[in-house]
Each structure stands twice: as structure tokens, then as C-alpha cells.
Image (tube, rainbow over all chains, first blue to last red; front, side, top):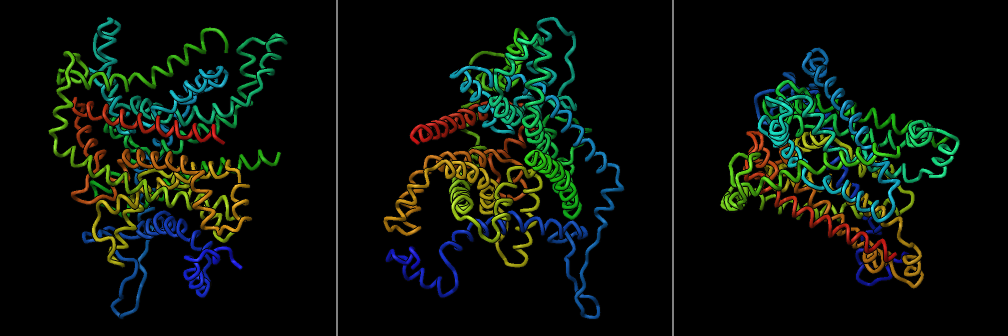
Length: 312
Length: 265
């Protein structure tokens, strides 16, 4: 007998579900499955379908998928016109390429800044280690938007950096930092630095200190030791951290909108403008679908690398 | 990597992480309207904030959205995590695993746009949801917050000693009773931490809310964003300081709860 039916209040319900061929188990599975199926998976099908439609001035602003032909038969209206448009228009091509470039450059800088921090924390004694780790995670919890805003006050013409440098007499005229690609790099590195440090840290704590000692006992300089022992061993951490910075950076909207210039092209921003300013929903959907492949490709690559590593 | 290089690089890294936030907080107490020129200590911008009806109204909307999203996300996320850790094999297991982790890496612009298109299509075919506003934002936030709750709950469920549940079953408790009397009390601190995380994530979101909200339902980040796009202003600094303080307290409580349970096990 099913254990569920033993508790009296459930007996009636359980009996009814049993009659319907449903068990409590399948009901429990159904709740998260249905929610995510409807509100996470289904939207992608709608996205795909609208990317094949055409923008019209109506409510909703796109052509229907099915239409009555003059002779009364149902016909399907779908075209790949939007995707062809994306491929042919230099704006979109450049936006994709420059998103990849900005995400790559930011990832490299996040690695250069994050690696020493992760290394230092991993080799620090407790309780210093826990405190430093907490200090890395804390800024991640404050609002993305407000962290971008904080850099506006730092980078602008009469901002903190320019004022400090000028009062120290290092520069005569303020540097132009706001509304440049450099500001976007800074913003992305700043926002995603914890994502780089945490996987690196997790990887580097597993490093055996005896290996480092052995290398230096055998006469290797600290630089040679670092290049031959921790660096190759921490490669999985480097890959994981880089992915966690690169993937969200590609789709970033807030940082280029706040810190970037009018010529800072990023695909998240193009999608936003296509939707909110041009009100072209089908093209915005097509932009999103192409972006989805840009995001999925590195994840698939990472998984295949991990699977191969697992087989070795 | 010994010697001066490493500590210097680490010091630089931490200055990079904290200097902008510290300056943001310091200049919120600035008398001058020029955000980055010090004109003496004052709490004047906090006073102006309290009188700003638009900000107060949107803060109230954001708090409601965050409260309901966090509640629903804990239910959906916990059930998802429970099913994946305790139910063994079932049809659609791989699908559920994918659907529950994918929102973690999905760019917000894609999530926002695709959900909006879903809501519009549903309104056309089913008549629900009628228009967009609080309800649609709550649904959107629940979906991506549930992923974060599921990660936390899954970790806890895997660490938990399963023999407790077995013992209860052997003593004749049904699965529902085992869940409510044994599993739930053990994982509650993790769920509280998950709730707080979901709450802050929802409170923080700009992009998804901008897509799925309707007229009259502007959340706090949406109002801040429209102000900030025009440039820095001292009342935003004051608001940022309050939010940072608020989040800091939430994180400390969550961290303390997680530590306490980790020690108890």
C-alpha cells in the first residue's frame, strides 16, 4: 500500500488522484516542471515564432503566424527576412563583433586582476582567508545598477579620479574617461570580478603547497615556479572563471548604457533600442535568437572540454 | 609569487572593488549639489529623498514585487531541488535540470523580451494576463530567482543526512509527513538564505522588469535608471547608500544562518 494513503486527511485526495492515474509524486514533479515549462521554456518558442514575423503598426505590432487566405484556407506566414536583414546590415554585424571583443578584453583584464587575489586568498591562513573571501563577495551583492552609477561619479570629467590627479598636479586637464569603451571595460571587469575570483579560488585551494616547495628547492625562481606549477594546474579554474565573465558580458545592457559612449556598440543595447525605440519586435526577437547562439556556443564548448577531461 | 608583487596586486584589487562604493556613500553626506566636490557634512539629500513621491511609490512597488517573487521562488525552487535530489529517475529529469539552471546564465535582455512576448501572446489567446504590471513582474522574477533558490536548496539537500528521512519512513510516516516533519525543518535555514537572495535579486533587477512591466508599475531600479541616465545627482547617492546598507544587513543575516546550520550538521 502506498504510504501516502495511510495518513487520513490525504486518503480521499490520494484515492481521487489514483483514479486519475496520478500519484502524489507526479504532482510534486509537475509543479516546478509546469512553472518553468510555461514561463521559461515556452517563451523561447514564442520568441522564435515572432522572429519569423513581420513588424506592422497594430496591436500586437507583428503579423500573425496563421492567416486566412482569400479562398478561405489557412496559410502560415513565416519568413527568414529578419535574419537576412541582420546578416546584411553592418550595424548588427558590428554590434555582435564588438560585443565579443568587449567581452573578451574585459575577461582578460578580470583574469589579470582576479588571479593574484584568488591566489593570495587561497594561500592565506584562516581566519584571514574567510574574511578576504567575504570581502570579495560583498560588493557582488550590491545593486548592479548602483555599482555602474558609482563609476559614473568616479570617471566623469570633474569626477573623483580627475579631481585627485589634478590636485596632485599629475595632469593639467581632465582626462576623458566617461562615455568611452575604456569605461565599459572598467564597468564590466568591476561587476564580474567576483565571478572570476570564486572559481579560481576554489581551484587554487586544492593546490598542494609541497609542489611549490619542491620546485623552489630544486632551484626554480618564483616566476618559473609559478609558470610551471600553479598556472597549468589552475587551468580548469581559469576556464570556468573566464566563462562566467565572458557569457554575461556579451549580453550586458546596463553598463554600456551608463558608461559607454554613443558609439559603444553592444548587442544587448541594440536589442533594447530595437524594442523600446524602434518598436520592431520581430527584429528584436531575431537579434535575441542570434545572441542566444553566441551564449550557448561557449557553454557547449566548455561542457565538451569537461567531458573530455572526465574521460582522461 | 612571493615578495612585494602579490600583496601589492591584492591591495590594488581591493581598492578597485571598494573605492567607488566608499566614495558613493561618502558623497551622499555632501552638502554641495556637485556630487564629487566636498562642501561639508549634511543629511540634506536624505531629507529630499523622503519627500520624493515618485521614488517612494516605486520603492513600495519594488518591495511588493520582491516579497511575492521571493515567496513563490522559494516554493518553485525548493520543489525543483527536492524532486532532483530525492526522486531518482523520472521522465523529464534532464529537461527539469536544464530549465532550473539555464536562467542563471541567460542574458537578462533575452529573458525579458521572451517573457514579454509570451505575456502578449497569452493575453491574445487566453485573455490572461490582462495588461502588464505587478503580476507579470512577479512571474518573471519568480522564474529567474527560483534558479538561485534551487542551487542553494540542492546543496543543502545533498549535504543532509538522508538516514533521518529513512528512519521516519521506517517508523511509518508517509512521504508528505516526512517532508514537513523532517526535511523541511532541516533545510529551513538554507531556504531563508534563498529567500533573502531572491528578495535582493528581485529588488535589484532593472532589465527584466523594464520589459515586462506596464504603465504605472515602475520599479525602483527603473526610476533610478531614468534619473541616472541624465547624470549623477546627490539624492541618488543617498538612495544608493540606504539600499547598500539594507542589502548588507540581509547578506549578513543570510551568511550567519548558513554558517550556523553548517556548524550544526
